[in-house]
Length: 311
Image (cartoon, rainbow, N blue to C red; front, side, top):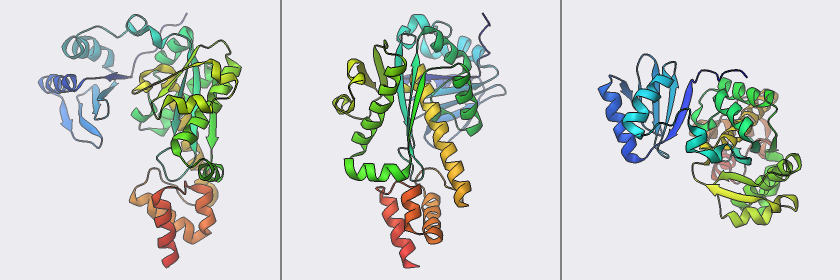
């Protein structure tokens, strides 16, 4: 059996007190600090970079000196316990057979809603861990997203990806009338697919987006036999993290391909830059182009049509 690859990225949940303790430890070790959006702080030295996100909070640690940093600074001085290499003891549920479900594109004006699911058992969980799989939201590089997605496919991990492109998403949303119900419908489709691939799997885990009864109601016959779990910070789970990467890859690839076809960039998010691109799209190709490339229930979409009509 081959030895695990060297660790280059690590994500850990922190309490607010631990986040402040880590700040003090980093300052004492001579790290240079900087402020970045959505972060309590970011710090780096010659070998290691640390980003502590407001949401959670959680720390994303990267660099060639990562394992030494975790073993000699993070665990003894911040966490108060040894975890690295002991995940199967400290978090055995990560390695038990289950599905992980996550989505991408939910908050972006342009592009599809993509929902993905991944099955893990002890062997697959170890493969994902050793490959460096982590929540896609902690990865800023498209190149890295695609590398990890390729690693997941090379490992032949059972998975399902459902892509709801705007041309399908918009009429579905008008019919269903609620984003949580639409998400539940997509999650149910993915769980059904995974149940067909791995019928003995006992449970499915996703991030908490709605009352779990909404998802239970959406599940079709095969999926109803499975135990559903929703919780915050579910992306710390290897299966959910892998699903987030597959969903993100499909989302960014769709935007890239659609942009090339229509001859303009389709930016991510809902910023003023996105709004300007949407206005340019409508002016160049008509309102129908927005229906084909954007989620039209967003308030921004109505504003775009109003601005485009003025010219």
